[in-house]
Amino acid sequence: MSAAHLTVSAPDAPAAPAAPAAPAAPDAPWTMEKPVDDVMADFEDVCAVSDLLPERAAAALVGGVQIALVRLLDDSVYALAQHDPFSDANVMSRGIVGSATVDGQDVPTLQSPMYKQAYDVRTGACLSDPAVVLPTWEVLVRDGRVLVATSPRAGHDSAGAHSPATATTG
Image (cartoon, rainbow, N blue to C red):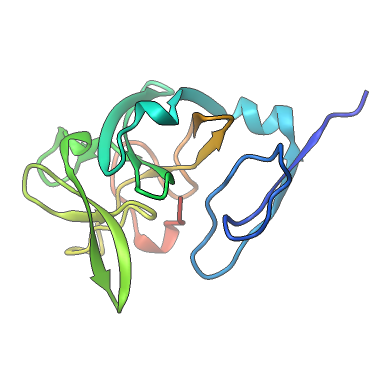
């Protein structure tokens, strides 16, 4: 028996009915082909999308690491580190979800509840200090469930901030 394959495309490209929606880089869509079993083994089922209030963050534990989940009004879901590097506290899920204009573009943000730094929810980049980047995790929404990668994106670890050059959208 051969393994089923999953093709994931950018949100603006039509997807096969059974394929989960997946985030794509803002400048170029991407496609990934990987056996479904391999993809799902790398993700943890966290909650139903309906459990997350739009424009609010929520805390979750994925792979033993605290993360902040953010659901936007368009039902896209992002995962960032729960740890605020400026206050050294796990508080990001208590932050304010909003947006900021950066280079003429509307950027969805999560603002730290402690010292109010705003982070791009797609990349984890701090808008006021580009050298600081919160680790991010890939998120899939499948059949109304939020699935979060068990490891942070490449170039990130769950312990701290990293260079914006390694950040990708989520």
